[in-house]
Image 1 (cartoon, helix red, strand yellow):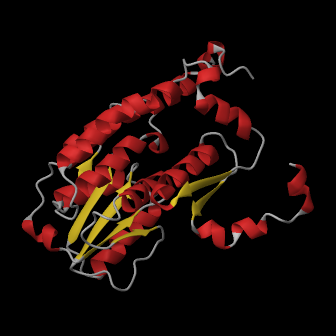
Image 2: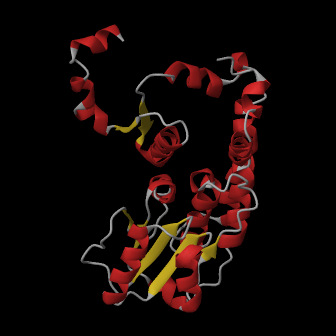
Amino acid sequence: MDLDDPKIYQQSLSLKTTIASIDAFPEQLEQAWRESSHIPFPQKYKKAKNSIVCGMGGSRFTPLAVKERFKGELLIPYVINDDYTLPNWVGPETLVVLSSYSGTTEEVLACYEEGKKKRVVLWTAVTANGALSEILKREKVPFYQIKPTRNPSGQPRLGVGYMTAGHIGIIYATGHLSSQAHEIEKSIKKIDKLIESYNINIQKVGNEAKQLAQLIYQRYPYLITAEFLQGFGNSFGNGLNETAKSISSPRVIPELNHHLMEGLKFPDKLRDS
């Protein structure tokens, strides 16, 4: 396949909108940060002793990216919960963030129902629509409702910028992130420049994204990242699984040094691949 052939990317409307959503990542980040970081949370939210984010798939790896990138700036524990149930320690002093782009994720909705039994009062969310937004509006809970004008595909996994910056904005607006707003905004403004060489219109000879796509085609890639980038490694794997329908395994340094490197000795056929 010639990845420089423009005809490949004009075969279907869904492919065009997928690419448009990917290209809009910087704009998604900017919009979501601007909107979510200014949510007027009540003072009680700033007194939370810990926090937990309930999410799955594309609504999980985004807060995971936030957790690992801002590990040194988070002022309270920030736990990712990818399950139907909540830990026993969750209670009235826990900030519970419900993360579901679609607003219909059954695990997240189950956590909401369980949280009510645990007397959770510090609710918020990052979502675009669905049952979740209806529930929170009815309960008069402050949350970030995504307006996905920069995600023409409509696919939650391609609204990565909205989910990522939405979670950063919420933890900032609730007073549990020590980073300064201007630092975050400066980083977002750099994204355009950082990814410009990966654009679909850039020829493969100068496009590392196309080179990587060809390298891993029909292979089982291990996506190895440093610990502070593990959320993005998970994001890459999610994209390969859901969009490319291709298997992959995110791995993290330094954990893999303790077992995976030894495990690559067998089976013998690995040496021939």
